[in-house]
Length: 126
Ligand SMILES: [Zn+2]
Ligand SMILES: [Zn+2]
Image 1 (tube, helix red, strand yellow):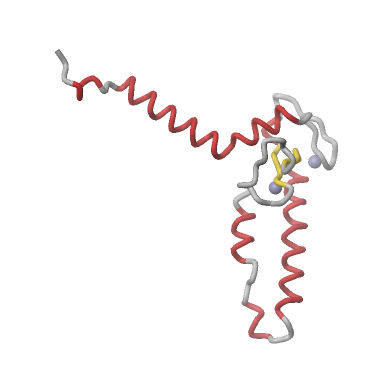
Image 2 (tube, rainbow, N blue to C red; image 1 turned 90 degrees about the vertical axis):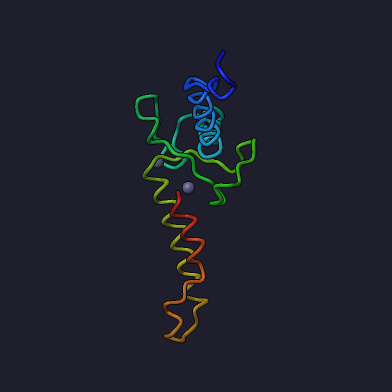
């Protein structure tokens, strides 16, 4: 008779690993699957249409730029192609940069001060 310890075979371990992977996926990318089910596969900016062959070029944009804000009704999601998604984030960062300039005031020493540095890090994640 095998001991309880020996019962933990690789098959079981594989299942644990698989489940962990699924959990991580659900946390990280689950919203993409949901958004793709919810919305037509069309870029919200340039109206480019997508199919299974090029679907990975269609990305989910978070309207409020908060990737952790994923309401189930999809109200924070917008499907954008890679190019339009890039543009969208560039515009947002430029808007932040402009704010930073006006908030920085006239003092030259404040030129290196980046009030939105943390926010930019967040955006860079996607
Ligand atoms: Zn587009
Ligand atoms: Zn985005």
